[in-house]
Image (cartoon, rainbow, N blue to C red; front, side, top):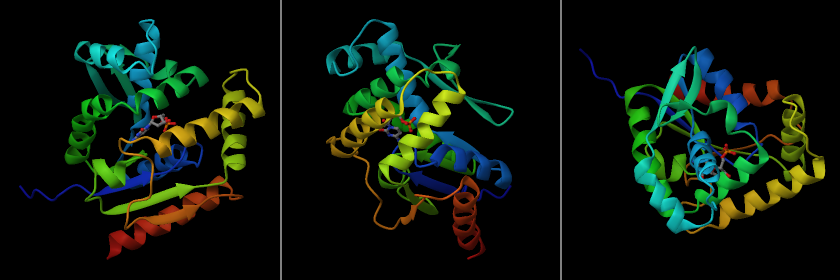
Length: 227
Ligand code: DC
């Protein structure tokens, strides 16, 4: 049996740049697995809140990690995250969990805890994996590394529309504030901060429609696969 190394595409960038929507669409088209690594940090943030802890209390967060069994499952192409057997996929998209995820993601023990799961998933299948440190830390040998970004106003506008569609009540200015805070936390933490990998391709989606951004990324992937 030939054991060709799976193909991996790393997509990093700040929240709301379109990483997950674009990655999901392209993974489906290419027959790759889409791995949303933010969901793992969100699951930890959710669990901390659920247990009454503070997401920036590193002793508390570290203390509960040994009690957490995290699994990724794929049901009809959709990624599900399970904590100790419970599917929390539908519970981790609230603004509270977003902030909690950003806080717990600054704790090195949390990053170590999630590293193997991410790495092993990319060893098993062709993946498009999105996050903040995929090209820099998790898959430094990825076949393609993309850094996807857009202005904070654009990103907040898109996220606001998404939340509204889901019936989550919030305002544009709250979303913009949260996003600015998360950008700052994610880019300035000591552990694996958000930054473009050295050999990544920078794509700015400001002002683009989703279709335009998808075409750009698709072109980059096709070009690399044909080489
Ligand atoms: O992509 P997202 O918004 O679902 O991610 C939630 C938080 O998790 C984000 O604020 C930063 C953190 N995160 C990270 O530190 N590293 C990753 N690879 C993915 C997410």
